[in-house]
Length: 186
Image (tube, rainbow, N blue to C red; front, side, top):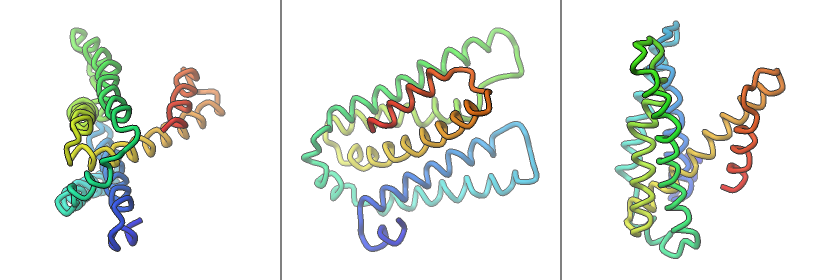
């Protein structure tokens, strides 16, 4: 992937960025978790390096070329709608969980996943969908990154869910089956 990106492949460059975003997202969760381990400083370093790498790669991305390459994207509006709905669904799922915990003065607040989702992933997903709908260059650039990240994230969650299912620990198999169907449509 990195080799192809360095030789000028736009798809490989988007994949590289998306996989680095996924890596940063995962290690941000480990770094922000309330359980500190001997790996804490490694988590922080990997998260920081992933963030710097993504910023560097985005700064060198030719968004005009990407916008031109996706001008005739057959499912542009459908994809834009999917991105907007994804952001809204994240809010719809996670916000009630957090709001239900506030009046109870519980130490069990949100997870790092929820913080990242509500502060970054959901609003950027909505904004990317709007930009894609309007055919703005950054909409085209970020769409590929979001879709690749969605596929990698959903795949990793599904692997964990199926492992829990096999071990008899999965609480809601219907959600796992629904995610499997959605992932196969992407």
